[in-house]
Image 1 (cartoon, rainbow, N blue to C red):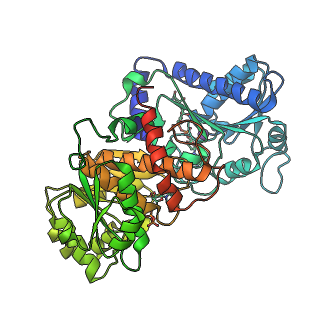
Image 2 (image 1 turned 180 degrees about the vertical axis):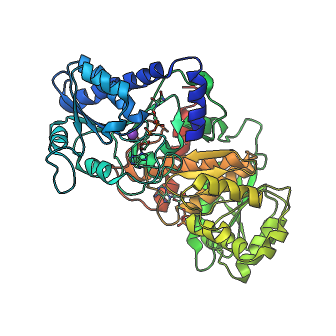
Image 3 (image 1 turned 90 degrees about the vertical axis):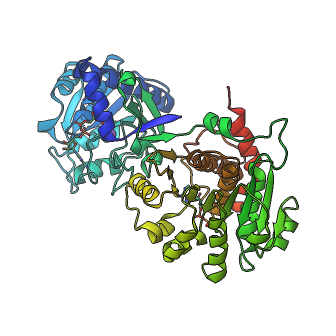
Amino acid sequence: MQGVWTPESVRAAEQRLFEQVAEPTVMRRAAWAVAVHCARLLRDATGGVPGRHVTLLVGAGNNGGDALWAGAFLRRRGVGVTAVLLVPERAHAEGLAALRRAGGGVVEAEGAGADTSGIGAEAVEALDRADLVVDGIVGLSAHSGLRPTAAELVRRVEVPVLAVDLPSGVDPTTGTEDGVVVDADVTVTFGGLRACHVLGAGATRAGEIVVADIGLDDHWGRPDLLMLDAEDVGAVWPVPAPDDDKYSQGVVGVAAGSATYPGAAVLTSGAAVAATSGMVRYAGPAADVVRSARPEVVATGSVGDAGRVQAWSVGPGIGTGGSGREVLVRVLESGVPVIADADAITLLAEDSSVWDARDPDTPLVLTPHAGEFSRLAGDPGTDRVAAARSAAERFDATVLLKGHSTVVAAPDGRVLVNAFAHAWPATAGSGDVLTGLIGALLASDLDPLIACASAAYVHSVAAEIAATGGHTVPGAPARDGSAGSPAGASPLLAALPDAISTVRSTVGT
Ligand SMILES: NC(=O)C1=CN([C@@H]2O[C@H](COP(=O)(O)OP(=O)(O)OC[C@H]3O[C@@H](n4cnc5c(N)ncnc54)[C@H](O)[C@@H]3O)[C@@H](O)[C@H]2O)[C@@H](O)CC1
Ligand SMILES: Nc1ncnc2c1ncn2[C@@H]1O[C@H](COP(=O)(O)OP(=O)(O)O)[C@@H](O)[C@H]1O
Ligand SMILES: [K+]
């Protein structure tokens, strides 16, 4: 499990560190790590380090200070360094002096000979000469989009980029982008992940994320968000023990699909079958289709006839009319944990009387995409963590907000994020697969928060396997979705066993 911190928490930890270690020392540690990874990138991109050229884009704060100090260190390795200052009068003074002492060049972004976009001739030259650009424009104190000059410089970059702390242009708290954003090959951050590294555009714009040690480890408070890794998921994924039988592992009920949407029933039931090895019951009008697609599913026509289950997956394809409502109410009254998705969420949003059927002591999971979330709780806005957290509290339910990064919030305020940096699950029907996975994990009695985040993790791995035929690091988030080809929800479903065994294979390694 990896902790993730908001800018406020990072600053609080830094302050505690500064009580023991002087701030300039900490900055030099940070800059040293930046310089080490610059050298690595230079070597990768050009085959060497001495004689290469690095251009630093330097903003008004400590982020620019890190870049300037890193430039000074790179000079010692024979690298040509030019700093392009965005706000010359507010550039970090000690960093600037260190770079000058080391023989680095300094130019102004808006210096003499400016072209129509306002960028000075020397700054243009520095970018043209660069083998590598260091983004020290803005860090944790960034607010709103990049200012025009910074945006113009970023637009002109054509070589690999190393971002200091975070790719400038993304919001440090929400990871959202507003206009031009640095597209980094590597981001070097300090002590621990920031929220923008795992949320929104930040999760992809950061490129490879390196967490450098600057002495913060003993100073962190409780993480604001957590991310499960493959080993965490593998360790909790339920598998049968010697004394288990088909009932003891938890039976999951699936109330999904209709005559119009039998596919939703097949995808949800199929995922439940793949998730755990107990029993899956299906209840609904697509019973015949489910039986022929998945003979192992015990299928009946209605929830009332289904027999006992330990959790229900309800919603995909049930419709938002009277029969869908009837199904949802039956399931909510059953007194077992429920995961409600798709039409079930719309029904809950549109008809408050449906909530009366819910047993308040039984876990409820809601898995809206942004549109369903809006219907249920209003526009999630850019701060998806805050939105999911407040909905979880308001509905006393675990809320999984879908999207490029999946945010899962428990009613007690805990939040887990799944931040696979690829978008392969964005395909019709893949949400139905997720619903079946979560239902099966709830039936096996996992904590709903862990069940949701684990299901989301395996779902991402399966989507990647379906699209690419494999993945580079077993079970680990791919940071590059460039390889592969679109695959629909059926290949994603078919890849679940491979995804689960891949994730489980990381346990104890
Ligand atoms: N204080 C320290 O010793 C340490 C600081 N660290 C670095 O310090 C950074 C935070 O430094 P600061 O708090 O000084 O702030 P920043 O460097 O993030 O930004 C400060 C300035 O950037 C400008 N700015 C804000 N939004 C902008 C936008 N959208 N476009 C262009 N310019 C914008 C503002 O003028 C603001 O004053 C971290 O991200 C990290 O890189 C690390 O070195 C760890 C140690
Ligand atoms: N851009 C994206 N990147 C990664 N995952 C995505 C993206 N868009 C959607 N997803 C994931 O794909 C799934 C889609 O679910 P949903 O919207 O319910 O679709 P459907 O109802 O067609 O099954 C969710 O797990 C969601 O998190
Ligand atoms: K930056």
